[in-house]
Image (cartoon, rainbow, N blue to C red; front, side):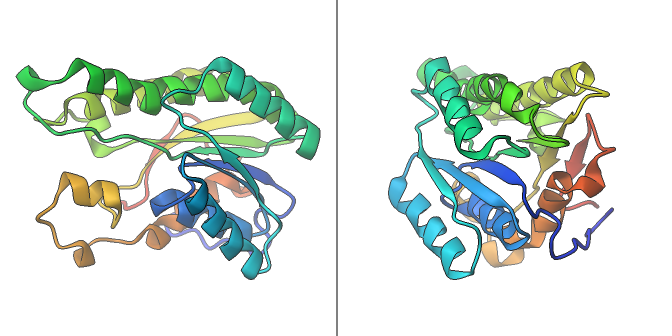
Length: 247
């Protein structure tokens, strides 16, 4: 499965929602999914960035994407229910969700964790992903084989000093994935996590400002796993936390 070589039409006729689609891994995933034949729903808080990804997909000959401007920090169940209703009406089904959007916050000693920042990180990284997926379950059930992919982290498996709320949110993400995977085992919905590892993104640069980004993998280098988990070839994968940069 490492470095999965996807067939050209691996995602043909699939509808895939990508959160945080405006830049970084989300942008790369959206462009890659479109390249392999998917119709992509681009969700993010910055319309200008989403429009740029939209234009790139169209220029490359991909299926026309949809844009959903939404700030996960303030989004409520009503927003997600409305979105699910629109997806069902416009597309009839949803084949995949990539929960890529995330908030790092500020790395700090445990004693200095700020409560407002804690709430924001939990809201965006955990609660929003839960509420969105909950609302999307009915439209995911309309697909013959739907894939829900959460974004994890190495600090969501083994806690690390100073990573506080972000690390805790990723432990929660792993738990959310495992609960869902067990609950939907044997159904048409499979649920997994991806740990992208050290990647050349703005979030990584914020966490490691002194690091040479040119020594890191790019988001494009990781796309083999992102495509694999959305393709029908991964139908048997459920409840797993997979590394995009396996050692």
